[in-house]
Image 1 (cartoon, rainbow over the protein chains, first blue to last red):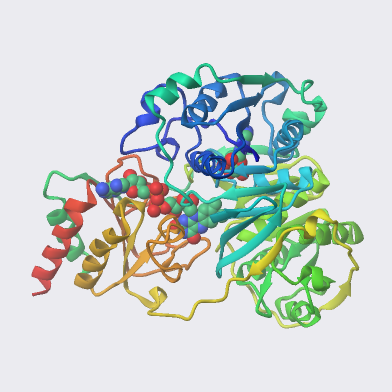
Image 2 (cartoon, helix red, strand yellow; image 1 turned 120 degrees about the vertical axis):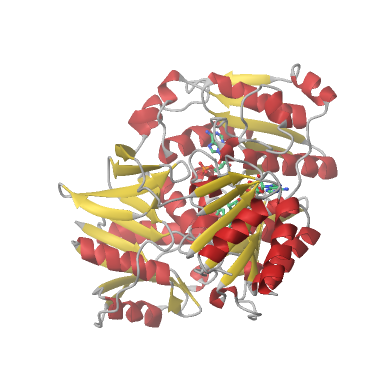
Length: 258
Length: 319
Ligand SMILES: Cc1cc2nc3c(=O)[nH]c(=O)nc-3n(C[C@H](O)[C@H](O)[C@H](O)COP(=O)(O)OP(=O)(O)OC[C@H]3O[C@@H](n4cnc5c(N)ncnc54)[C@H](O)[C@@H]3O)c2cc1C
Ligand SMILES: Nc1ncnc2c1ncn2[C@@H]1O[C@H](COP(=O)(O)O)[C@@H](O)[C@H]1O
């Protein structure tokens, strides 16, 4: 089974962009920030490969430095990395990104295309549906539990009403929840081995994408204005020095909340 | 300007979020029509008339019975063509997000998500959306039509005006790949246990509780405060706590007097379900966790140390 996993490099500043706030293990390797929820998608792909055999290829659309993040996925155990990168691609919105990514994915014709739950910089949680549409493949999104046999995937997906169970024939597109698994940490051997795994950087021409459908010219949305959000009232933030519980109880009592 | 509002319905009722978006679209102005997709939905479609919309399109048939996104992309493509809509608006939901993004790709149309307000500026639709963890407020636009927007949960309230709607059915045959995924088992509304929606005090637990057993800390603190226990989607999806206790975009919206978040990062999708709480307290060991941006009282520390002590002190004080 050939599995393509779409992963994104995100800015590594800010809380939501850290891979693991407890160990910082992947961050310390200094390889840039792989979007945290995409790590779950890579993990799921590795587990499927371990059970069914095959190949895991990670695919990203972004600037050349995104290779650092792709190497993290290789260190976890992915076999190969493809980066679609082009000067003309900067400023791509959903329509443009889904077009370029789908073009790159068409070259791979994977049995299963996996996505993470959402990119921490876009907070979109939408890209997979646009890519599935462009690939003309069935989609199961936000999957918290995934089963695979040779011919189909069945996913448990949370909606506003509980869990749906949805099944789709392969080839299919699946986006996974960040609770679907507990991702492994790359071993030292994995990190060393990643350096010799194949990585490809492809231009828009390489993937047969029309340049004016990508980047700013291919995008259909625009940012008109930026403003700070409305200020919130007084906030208290304390570091626990052993007395935080006492301070909090006093504060709650003072506001008649106990 | 013509606008279509996707009216998502479950169990014969149009979702509150969709009706809220409809109300806002009607207030903003222009020709507004609704769209209802499903099987045997004429009555559901007509019911939208009471919310002020005069025209509702339906796409009706067995292929549209299960709430799956891809056949609905075909349906909306057809209705958009039939109606010549310039704007297509959705209330954010798991289903609608996938439809909106699929439709954007189908029509090569712009999609703005997490929209919290819409307006008309120089005859064109613009929208406001908070971005980067609500740290910046962005005014966004579209450079071509149709303009597609996904509106953040809870942004607008429905307005019941009374009235009737004319229902127009549009015949659509879905594409082959659109019907390849199928619903094996559809979620049913869970039999309601003790509801977190009525609680004055909620102690909510996230992945920071570490293990399913970690929820005992939340339960103990909730018991001391006389409150209920809630959870994030991350721990519900992981099977640590029941779905009926989930707070957020795909869970419940709560507004207790006091909301204590233990080991919760404060993702937007969690925030939308609890931001109207009277007082928000957060205990998180990561000083940069987004929850501190909107907590009234934040404790940067290990919940395993702080929460039990807090429960003890509350019990002592309550005697
Ligand atoms: C379409 C969509 C809908 C969604 N709907 C919802 C929804 O309805 N509800 C919802 O909650 N989420 C929802 N999510 C998921 C949401 O984006 C987050 O993934 C989720 O809220 C994170 O849960 P969490 O805070 O428990 O976990 P994490 O984000 O992993 O945060 C755990 C936190 O615990 C802290 N921590 C760890 N150990 C300790 C310790 N010992 N002491 C103190 N702190 C500690 C960490 O610093 C971290 O900040 C949705 C996502 C999408 C894409
Ligand atoms: N530029 C990109 N390249 C590859 N995959 C991406 C890219 N952006 C987003 N993704 C994937 O799409 C998912 C959802 O992204 P988003 O809709 O932007 O929140 C992410 O979790 C990734 O799996």
